[in-house]
Length: 152
Image (cartoon, rainbow, N blue to C red; front, side, top):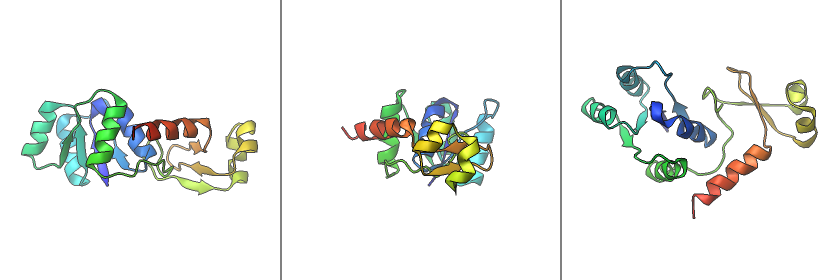
């Protein structure tokens, strides 16, 4: 599953990446025309809150999903249901740039993470594009709780 979130869905884009979904997100200067071209060229489902963009995308034959909600929880519920996504944390994509993460040995992460994190964590991932390191710390636990609350 590959999606492209419009300018209004930046937080949703981050959360979809957290779920392991290949999620493109345009820069602030990307035009609607460029968004439509990218969705078509990369065979992505366009997720949008913009009704004008939605109409243009449908006219152009782009697969779309209108996301009317403004709150993240409603957006996530809708997308998880509509796209039949697994609502579990994947830790497979960089939340910043969407690049697939690479598992790294703890020793290789040692000098790149805080000492207390290195002492408590055993598993680490690395983004080769933006050089960010990831681990299952308290943020991970908070994200898991948030996703579990969506089922209620």
